[in-house]
Length: 209
Picture 1 (tube, rainbow, N blue to C red):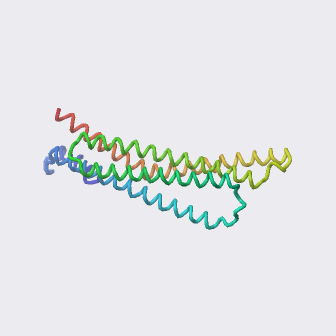
Picture 2: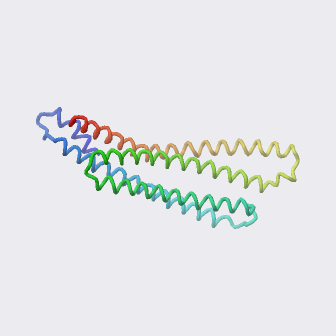
Picture 3: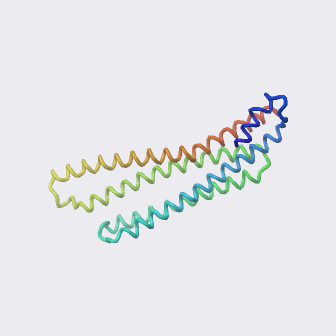
């Protein structure tokens, strides 16, 4: 991408700079887009792998079977399975976009696949934020179960739920802010480069009409 930006800045300004025709620019945009989507695909796999390791670590460290009621444990396992299936679907979508962008020679198809990849990344980020909220909800239910609020006084429960609400809110806010920062640093940065490629390809198409 740096080479492409360098060429775009100088190929018309500097008379001594080697001229690059539109087809060569288009090919570089094609190659750049393919590389960006490939990195999105690779990063999503790494993220999945880290998530699996984290879940295994939490599972192995949780040796007390009475910490969670069976219905909540069943629901948690169900959410885990569904989330992994959805994440695998997103990874497949990223790989499919990479394959299509790499193998297509049609500019309109390339533009369409870039748009699709951008939308998929947006949905992927939203999904992960929603899963954080679901995880916090399960954590709150588990803490309520462990506290055995049914057998506690009203005053105790008011303090407990107030404290729990504040803690869950602060942790949720911090986690979502951190995740958004990470995704902005990685995914959004790649998507913005894809958007620049998209705009440049559109400009080349308009000039040929």
